[in-house]
Image (cartoon, helix red, strand yellow):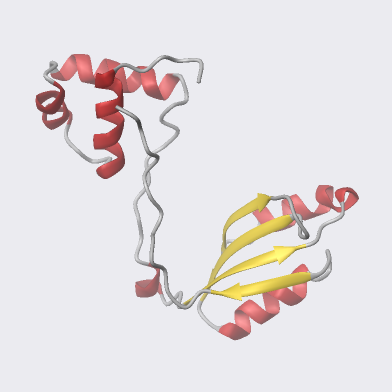
Length: 149
């Protein structure tokens, strides 16, 4: 990392990861700085790309997304020009990673029904062989980035 973070920056990052809506005055109290000083530090962290965004965590089940799956996909390098726009256009794709191993893509998806998942897999097979893993339960949800003090 090009930027050297001090203990106050690290504490601010930990607080924001726990709750990005923490009021500036509460963060200021925790790190023993003024509210304007904390605001300046957060703006600097954003400008340097250390903080890349703020997101609400949504309960997908309340929207009927009962099927979570990971799909491995073989994609040949020459297909990526066609594949990337396709995969970016599918709203049910939560994440797509280019990976090492027997498959070149690892795709995380949410669907309301297995029929919808099956239809999507059929579309994916235009690009290559797939292997699908349907999630039964999640023992560890998305975690914060560990920040050393």
